[in-house]
Amino acid sequence: MTLAVEQVTKHFGGLMALTDVNFIVNPGEIVGVIGPNGAGKTTLFNLITGVLPPSSGKIIYQNRPLIGLKPHKITELGIARTFQNIRLFGNLTALDNVLVGAHCRTKSGLWPGVWHTKTQQQEELNTREKAKELLQLVGIDEDEISLAASLPYGKQRRLEIARALASQPNLLLLDEPAAGMNESETDDLQVLIKKIQKLGTAIILIEHDMGLVMNICDKLVVLNFGKKIAEGIPQMIQNNPAVIEAYLGKEDE
Amino acid sequence: MDTILNPYYLQIIMFIIINAILGISIYLTLATGQLSLGNAGFMSIGAYVSALLTLKAGMPLYMAVPLGGAAAAIMAAVIGIPTTRLRGIYLAIATLGFGEVIRVIILNLTITNGALGLSGIPSMGIMLSKGLTAMGLGAGIGNMSVRQLGTIATILILASILGFLVFFSLRLSTSRLGRAFAAIKADEHAAEISGIDTRYCKLLAFFMGAFVAGIAGGLAAHISFYIGPKDFAYHRAVEILLFAVLGGSNVVWGPLLGSVILTSLPEVLRFATEYREMIYGGILVAMMAFRPQGLISEETLGYWQKKFTSRPTATKPIGLPRRTTP
Image (cartoon, rainbow over all chains, first blue to last red):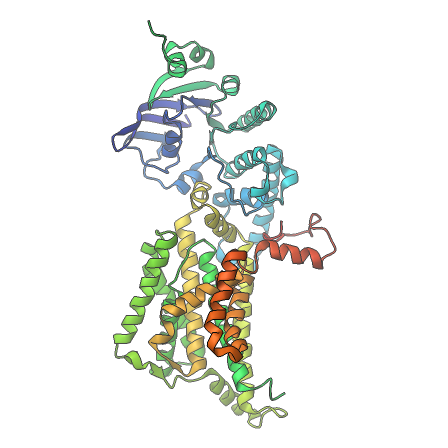
């Protein structure tokens, strides 16, 4: 089991953002988290990555409780994420963005960096090699030396995924990766996510594009007003009356 | 020859180098996006500690100055642990307050001689010329007196310290830690999520900035004979910050150029003494309006690099390319 979310609750003052949410993610699985806006999806990501502490409940990653760990420690353990509103390091090149992502997998400190020791140089070359491979994987290797901020939107989304992958995650959290993309871009993204899954990475995907979600997810978790209202394989969720009600409303009788 | 070796000019060159070192100290903290106004305070710690060590304990300079830097760094570690949690303007206010506290403490201690300051600090130039005399150069070389030689030797020492710090900063900016610093500056939250220990990096940057400021203080004390609490007041903190504002803080050359311009400007504008402050202020307002990123930014470097190398930037030389040239 890669991740287990157990009875997780988060409230901001009187607002219940999440109430007793449970689900598990198995190794290599793609789990979709869907729900109307404000359902608590991003809050869930913030709890898993340690940005916010849950009010109660447990989050367990590979038999290790995550609560109380700092975000960078959680990344080091193998959980990476992307953001709903892209957060790249705009004035760094695409390659440097990916290199920053590899920070927790590299070691050289201050002095080796200044004196260019042999181990540091070797590590630097290896990391660059891997970073270039990742840029190739997401399909933006020709933009290696462009500043991240100057890349078009779709490429920025891809670069963010490459940066997240640079930390060699076992679990990747994607927050609306298809937002703002056209159909063909979404199709490419679908291929990319499948590729990442083949590398052995489990993925939790927040997405509003139902086509994408239904196509690639092994399991769906549906949230509404912070509560899990359904969980199961996509075909089952599609016909679940509670889900239809949450999305479309209930017919008056 | 005599006009170039005029002690007045030599003195100005020394101040320019000291200020350039201070420019690097603010660059190092700003590299992580931390706006610290405490560098004048760290400078004063370095200056007083090393001056007292040479004056009262008779310690040689080459030990006293690094110890001054170390004292500043220790102080930075103590105040950095709480203050590096602060961001932006809050950090600026906290560090400014710290600088004032240090100044008031110095003003009230007996060992620092209060408002009168410390005078008779052994001068580096005189020490070096004594050394040169002992080496049998008492008569000087050519038409240069041994005093001038001592001053020139001082300048060479200061310049090599500055040179090392520039080298250090350049190498740092292209290393793993330098990238982490730049990432924190660009987006601290995203940097932390990307696996960077932001607290450690920010503390390290703060610590390095303080150490360099302390060294600059120690050196300043030993070239100017006298130091007093007034030298390290609020205006000094702002002056150091202005090096980075004028020159730019994204690459190390920025604060360096800023410090050279702002130190020589008062001398160049000597003919217009009455309007000096006005011109000074005018330049800064113009900077904010037309070039808020400072005189030298990463694009500037890229532009000049392209001009001087006929090779297009796409065909990069083998090895590890610089971060700053897209």
